Amino acid sequence: MFIGVGIRGHTDDSIMDPNPFKDENKAIERLVHELGGIKWLYSRSSYTKDEFWSICSRPEYEALRIKYNAQHLPSVYEKIQTSEKPRRMPRVDGFWNHVFAKTSVLAMKHKKATA
Image 1 (cartoon, one colour):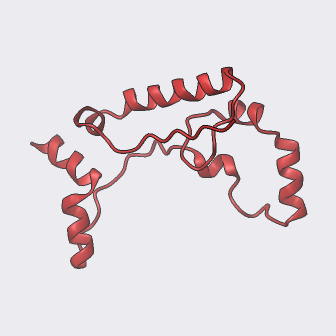
Image 2 (tube, rainbow, N blue to C red):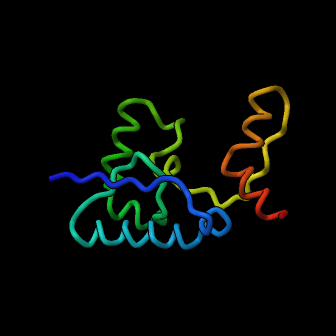
Image 3 (cartoon, helix red, strand yellow):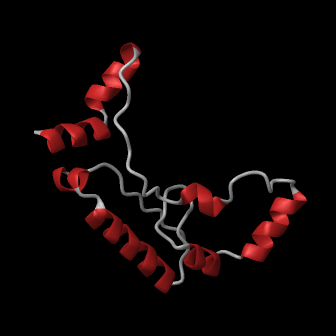
């Protein structure tokens, strides 16, 4: 049996402080693992490197990367990690960048922080 669960969007609370959302996501990852499941890797994760490779077989994965000459590409682990780097507001150059700067989640977060 497969069950796909996706959590998207934001609330007024989570746009200002994403840590509770991250904590809940981590709890879901832990529960899925405890129940014998594996999180689908279509989204970001909060696994540490050790946690990730204890769930996914690194030797098999690395063998496939070698077989298909993909060592130069980022690993799956690198692709799904949530960046802890602070994000900057987008520059406003051109029409679509102007729209994005006014309507994006980051713009709303910046607007609330400066209000």
